[in-house]
Amino acid sequence: MANFNTHLILSTTLSTALAAGLLSGQLITFPATPLLILLGTLAGILPDLDLPHSVPNRLFFALLSLLATLSIVLYPPYPLPIWLLLLLSIPTYLLIEYISSHLFDKFTVHRGNFHSLLAAACCALGTTALLFHAFSLSASTAWLAGGITLSTYLAHCLTDEFSSINFRQWRLKSSFGTACKLFSLRYKISTLLLMLMTGIAFYATPPFSEISTLMKSL
Ligand SMILES: [Zn+2]
Image 1 (cartoon, rainbow, N blue to C red):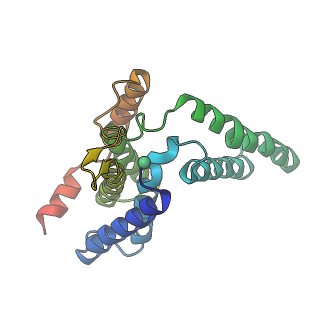
Image 2 (image 1 turned 90 degrees about the vertical axis):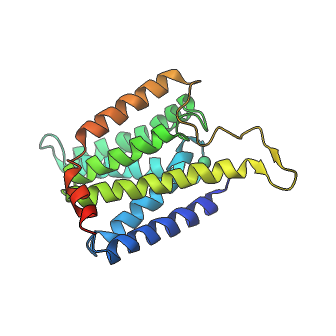
């Protein structure tokens, strides 16, 4: 398994190179470039989310708990006094930072479904749909962002797979074949859930026609 720094450097370099290429080809605008680099970098470390206490794992739940806490205070579902919102933000933070992360670690297995082509597709399609619907990016930019996240996610899986080869002795380590599988046959329920999420994400993606027209114009 490659370490966190290797994955971080690889995903940052790859997403920067891809975004720079898209920018020079005038396929994306300059303001969208940092966002695509950031998403590509995050996707490149995402497969290790299922590794308890890893940097991606801790970073994800810290960010999620922070976002949920801020959402409770800034966008309450009902008009409530500020003291009550601040009071509610404490259990929200604790619930996500400690309880949900504990449950996540309990029900996920490292190199289960997160290191798979199915998870990479789910991440890419989910990113495309989210950017188009929630952030109002154009269909072509959303699809290109999805393409960058797919590239860095797969780069992570392939790097882990290559790390399972002992090139000095031309021997395969026992972990070989676990990092870049199509999907996990061992964890059937999570595979079905991931298939369902991928299908929903695909259904929510914007039309592909805009990006294909853009590609033909090159
Ligand atoms: Zn990994």
